[in-house]
Length: 287
Image 1: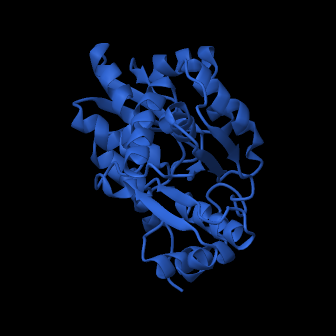
Image 2: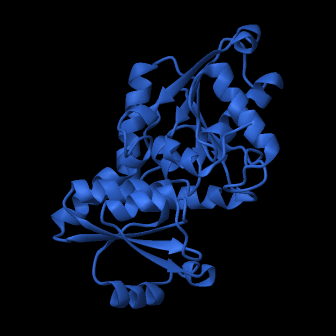
Image 3: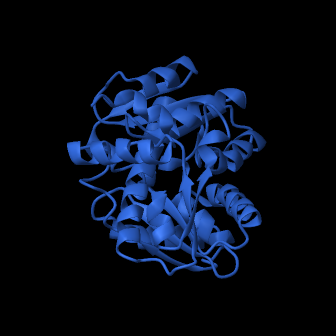
């Protein structure tokens, strides 16, 4: 791209969206050790949480089935029908829709006990799959990235719950800096959440890191006309499919920062494509 040449940057895209047709992107890394633990501990079912358009719920449904496990998805909000949830049902996931007030209680042990009494026993995986087991899997991703790009200076990653970013931080080596791009408005709380995830995993950040809080472009899942135009233009310019919620917002913000000379000349910068392309089916991409 002429802009990168002008700014003397080497810019790469880490295409984890291409690792698997159903559980692409970061989700396999986050689920891998959770599903192994469920089976090793003798569970026949996994239970997790997410919104109606959750990439995590979609990936969990397929991967649980592949592992020979039943799955239950606790879905925030009123009952809806969309392509992602249709897939989850087809793959055997039982969906339970709960109101938003109840969903906010998902970290309350008493509420979780009541939930288990209703839906049955199962190995509990948090929203987004973000826990110490997830960090273990994502650490392997970070090692792979740095093995392939040893000269890497900066790695960019879109953020929801912060689990992927925490896993990357736990395994980073050398001089690399990691930038997180939350797609939620007012996501400063993720600084604490990420530190808590690292602590729970017995890990520490191995590199400098920061969060860019200006990449939400209206809020989580918000795809206004300006972002839709920017997202589709980025795809056309770079010939890489992007999801509307995560990777497109990260890349849009990155381009803005390149224009602002945020990166030293000669830097090698990599953007982590975290998948989620199945979410495009719920968005009108016509002009």
